[in-house]
Length: 167
Length: 105
Image 1 (spheres, helix red, strand yellow):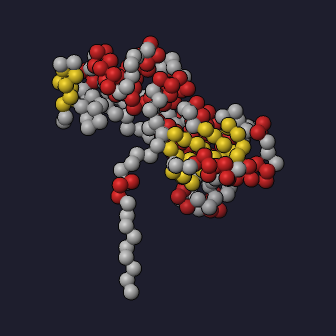
Image 2 (cartoon, chains in turn cyan, brown):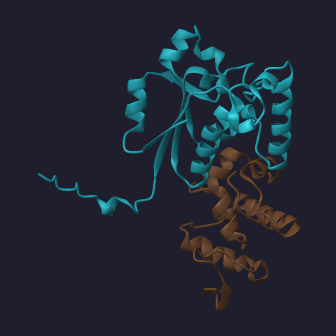
């Protein structure tokens, strides 16, 4: 017996995206930037944006931490640095410095400044309740750009009717 | 290249209506484009951004990023988005008569 192919709804294909909810879950420089660039880029297109920071992604919005985020030089095959070398003292700092220099040339802000820019552009930033509890954190530990601490359920409520992007 | 007739002037534009030759621009064209984009008036702050956008493009050959707009145009990021809710970088570029910005930032 052959199953009929499910019909594809082509009417939705050309609908512009009007709302996105972006999840930032990683705490390395290369783990954080993509979500921030997607968030800023969405605001630049007039798209409604919320950003949900969870697990180590919270590093991007923690006071005193978000100015010191580094590239992961171990377990990062894209860098083409052998793992043993990537683990040498100072390697992560060096690679981070090189990358930051290039980003500055391209006018990509450092993470702390970028987070504030995204909040100023009208995106709403949230920290994940489960992660906050796990790391014994409170609202005061976060930069002012973070609106509030919300549950996963709240997040899905806020994301209703839009696209969810996990990074 | 498509041509757009505005204020009795033929303008070379791209498919989205961005001017391809900034020298064809004048303030009257910005005003007419603004009406079409739904702005009842262009305030002094709108003009600050539009003029800055144009000066930067003419000086460097690229449109400024939102970061540079926020730092150097005299209008901060929050205000930029209040002035141009559908995206300051692109809309201001259009009104400033420069090609569509191509950066991701």
